[in-house]
Length: 307
Image (cartoon, rainbow, N blue to C red; front, top):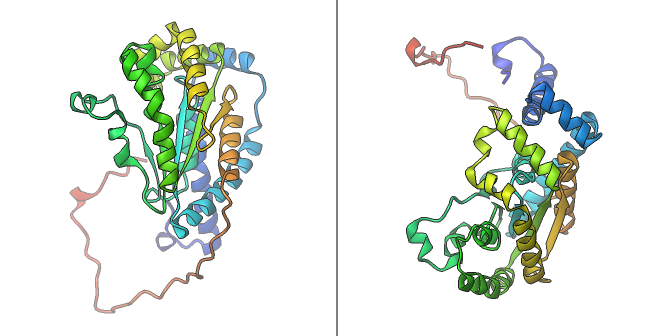
C-alpha cells in the first residue's frame, strides 16, 4: 500500500494507486480461476463457451458491491437481522459468491459461518443447537456456507442420519425457520445448481491444480459417485422446505461470473433499503510536537523486504 508520507507523489496520484490496489484484490481472486495447466484450461474453455468479458464483469461487480455497502449501512441503521444460506453441490460456487459479497464489507457487520462436522458432544444436542449461537443480532448479516440443511443433503446421502432423524428434521425445519422470521430475522436461502459435467470438470481442476487441491475432500469424491442420490435428496428437500416465509432461490452456477452477479443482484432486490446519510468526514490536523523524535526500532524486529 502506498503512503503519501513516504514519497513526494501528489494526493491525486496516491489516491489512484490506492484504487488500483483495491482493484487488484479482485484480480487476485479471479486468478483462482486462471491458475490451471494449459491443457485443462483449454478443455474447460471448449466445454464452457464464452463468459462475460472481464472488464464488463468487473464493472458490474464493483457496482453491485457499492450497493452491498449501502445495504450493510441500512441494516446497521435499522437494526435489521439477516441470515443468508448458501447450499449446493460441492464445487458449485458458493464460496466464490460469498467472497465477493464480503470482500468490501465490514466484518463486524457481515460474517461468514462455515461449521465443521459436529463433535461427539454436538451430536447429542438438539440438531439446530449448534447453529443458534451464530444467528445475527440487530445490525448484523450472517452468511452460512452450508447450514442446517447438511442433514437433508450429505448426512442423508452418506447415511450419517437415521430415518427418524430425517423425519424429525423435515418436521422441525419449517417451524424453526418460521420462528426465526417471527423473531425479526430475514431468512434467504440459495441453492447453487451445476450440471454433472460441470462438477466433473471442476473436480478435475482441483485434482490437478496444487492451489486448489485442499478444496477436494474424500466426501467430495463420494459425492461424484452418488450424484443421482444427491439429486433426489435435493428435490425432496426443496419440496418439503420451500415455505413462503423462507423460500428457496436457485442460482444456475455453470458460469461462475454470471452466477455471482445474478445472486448478488437478487439478494439486493429482496430488501427495500436506501442510502443512509453520513456526516461529512474531515481529517483533523495532526498534533505536532517539535521536541518529539521518532525512535528507530531494532532492525531484527522488521520483516525482511524481499519484494
